Amino acid sequence: MSTRATYKIDGVCFYIHYDGYREGAAVYFWNMHHAKDKNPRGGNAEAFLRGNELSEFTKNHTVHGDTEYRYDLTGETLTVWERSGDWGKPKFKKAWSGYWWEFVNAHARMIDGFERLAKLNGRVWTRSQLATKAGKMNAELTEYSAKFPTHIGNINGINADLQRASNALAAYKIEGDAV
Image 1 (tube, rainbow, N blue to C red):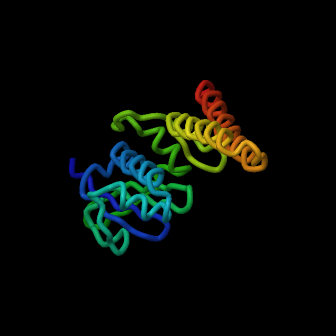
Image 2 (image 1 turned 90 degrees about the vertical axis):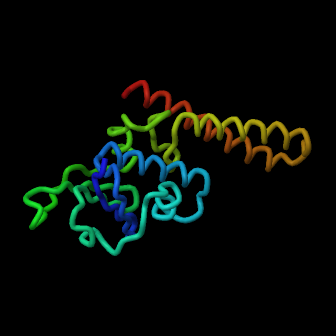
Image 3 (image 1 turned 180 degrees about the horizontal axis):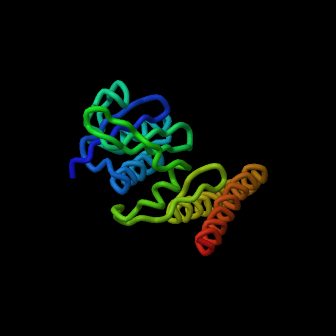
C-alpha cells in the first residue's frame, strides 16, 4: 500500500513511500530495534536506516507534500502526526505520543514473529533477546571460571552481569503476565 510517510529520528529525516500507516510504521521501528541489536554503534537514526532498506534521506517533513503520516522520534519519545484537512493545504494533527516501543507493541499486527518489547535495565528487549543474553552470560561464566578459577573479581563481575540479565528476564515475564 502506498501510504507515504516521513520519519524524523533524532534530527535526521527519512522518507518511505510505502506502508506509512501505523501498523506499517511499527514494522519500521521494529526493524530499527533489531538493527540496533545486531550493530549497537550509532543511534536510532543509523539503526533506522540500516534496518529499513526502503528508507531514504529527505530534508524535512514538508518536502514530500503527499505524505499522510509524520513520525517524530526524539530519544525514546515518539509522536505520530496524521494528515487532516484538504490536500491543497495539509494540516497534521497529533494522533499518538509515547515511547516508541509502546507504539510498536500497540500496532504490531503486521510483524512476523512479534514479541512484546519492554524496557528493562535501561534497554529495550524482547523475551528472546533477554533469554539469549542470559544464555551467553551463563556460558561465559562457566568457561571463564574453568579457565581462570583464581580470577575471583572477574568471575564475580560476569556473575553480576548474568544476574542482571536473569532478573530482567524474570521482570519481563512478570510485566508480560500483568499486561
